[in-house]
Image (cartoon, rainbow, N blue to C red):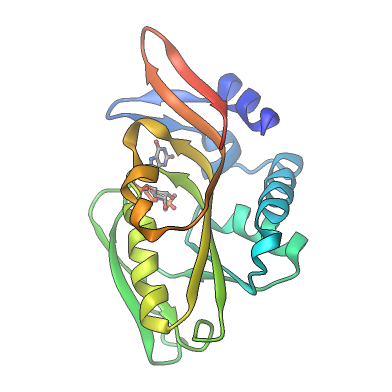
Length: 193
Ligand SMILES: O=P(O)(O)OC[C@H]1O[C@H](OP(=O)(O)OP(=O)(O)O)[C@H](O)[C@@H]1O
Ligand SMILES: O=c1[nH]c(=O)c2nc[nH]c2[nH]1
């Protein structure tokens, strides 16, 4: 998605530890036209798989997942990181590592909104190590739903999450790929794959 690549080149900042700050378009402020385009790209790519549900994880996955759900006309469910008292049991749970905040987080999805009838695509903001998708897949498997594919806004190709998830045997589609980034070279980014 060329507009996303341009926005990353214009606004992306390299932070210590191999982190990319894109708070102006993905992780803090959201841009309506860019976010709508993300949804349209994911919807077009995943429509042939005929999903009936989108799963994401709070917080930064919600915007691209909702944009996709609006175009596809299917519900979007987000895994919660704290179990509210309103959540109906049984809830499926898995642990994941928060890359930006550090530490282990618990993820919860109620059986009320995910089950054996669901054909699921996962939409998230970043694909880095692939650990988060692995955790969501644990939840999907426990629920009896079927995982059809993964869409992420930004892939950090140098972390090789795509390779690490190869055993899942699902299509993975990203909108921009960070090939590498360093002080010397800056952010080397290309249209996703
Ligand atoms: O492929 P991975 O190595 O798992 O990294 C990707 C995950 O890291 C971030 O989550 P995080 O909890 O840090 O941030 P958020 O609260 O902004 O969603 C991001 O939102 C992805 O879910
Ligand atoms: O804002 C972010 N920047 C990153 O580099 C990253 N990697 C995983 N998750 C991330 N979130």
